[in-house]
Amino acid sequence: MSGDSLIDTTPAPPPAGPRARRRAPPGAPARPPRPVRPLDRWLVSLVRKGLGPLPARMVLWDGSVWPLDTEPREPVADLVMRDRRALFGLVRHPSLSFGESYMTGGIEVRGDLLAFLEAVYRRWEHTPYAGRPRKPWKLASGNTVRAARENVHHHYDLGNEFYRLWLDRELLYTCAYYPTPAATLDEAQVEKMEQVCRKLRLRAGERVIEAGCGWGSLALYMARTRGVTVRACNLSREQIRYAQERARAEGLADRVEFVEDDYRNMKGAYDVFVSVGMLEHVGAAHYAALGELIDRCLARERGRGLLHFIGRDRPGELNPWIRKRIFPGAYPPTLREVLASILEPWRFSVLDVENMRLHYARTLGHWRERFEVAASRVAAMFDDNFVRTWRLYLAGSQASFTTGYMQLFQLTFARTGDNDVACTRAELYR
Image (tube, rainbow, N blue to C red; front, side, top):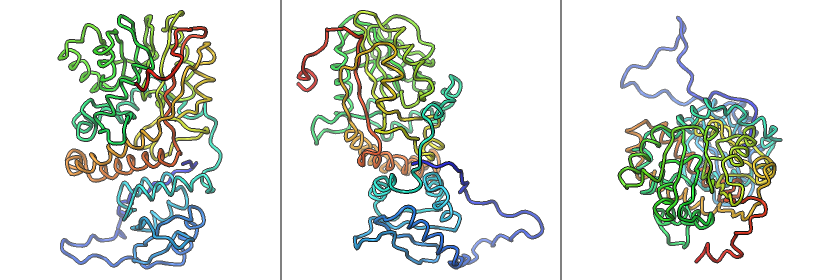
């Protein structure tokens, strides 16, 4: 979704001064809802014209119901508007205001939230709100080392206990790989790590550099199963401490080094570069720096690597509410942007590209199920607004992958002229 204006949809504070409205005493009956006026009916018509048709109904604060569809089909959800502010936000800047109002309770979705969001994503490119995206290099251009640290802290340092409630036992916060429809989340995440190792053709004794290592599971898996040494970096203090403690507990501290630092500061010579779920946080303005780092660190003869990232088919902004509340500074690139800015200038050859978006949709489905089971505990750790924020984020992310609005690319590359490559994919799917 995109937009170029910002509407503050948080509830307004009570007016100050002698004319301030008096608060009702405890136990007093609730004030009746404000009547719907011609202005409100006009705003509803604009929503129906701008966003519709959608298989949903809008329910205003007085209980009146307004279909958003033009076809005789069963609505998947009711969009309940608590006040005029939320309704106006949907007209002015829907991609931001919907999230803000849902987060604070100004909008409630009664019914199938996922199906409603899928309908919105399928419709979005045909609405006047989609517009033309800003130039890619202007998006997330401010991801300096300091800004990147602040962005990581905003999301990844919410507490390990929070993520333990709904991630798999390895604490992998990236797309899993499902070898069969019946695979569990835990099985699929292990299979994803195995797939990464196979695609990289890791050999005992090789040196690996990992940019953005999360809680360290992949680095430890590579060292444990392939006999490589790994230097992994991350800006999240909580994640790095957890990874370091786990490396010591598993007796791998001499083969896996976890460093709390920005990828741009990494030094040394390595055989393999790997990044899983980090490229989305780099920003198009910094792709050249990442490409230079990869070229500087990788061996000239048989250097190779893997990039696993959320992307898009065409350049476009990340949903502004997601950028504001969930992933500040994030930008999902297209394959063309990655190739042109990161790989081509340094004469790397692309070996394989796999689109795993449906695997990510299933991963997010498992995360959502676990999150809802733990919702009361999450509310106790934070508050109800936080629960609604993450409920919308997880559901919206799943919808973006099921509809193809977002993609999940896994790309392998090597030095130009390296002939030590697999001739078939048989080894990947044995």
